[in-house]
Image (tube, one colour):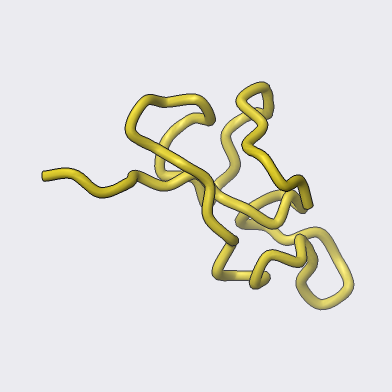
Length: 59
């Protein structure tokens, strides 16, 4: 897993918005707990990156 966001990767199924969208940030994938793997294969939510893009705070 990368330690910094990758704004060049495509949107994964678990992302709330495309990478690089203002007002978003990366968070550990809850499906694989950041490992990028589920049952010995690539996580279907984060596509193996270990993180997903989510909206951050604000109101």
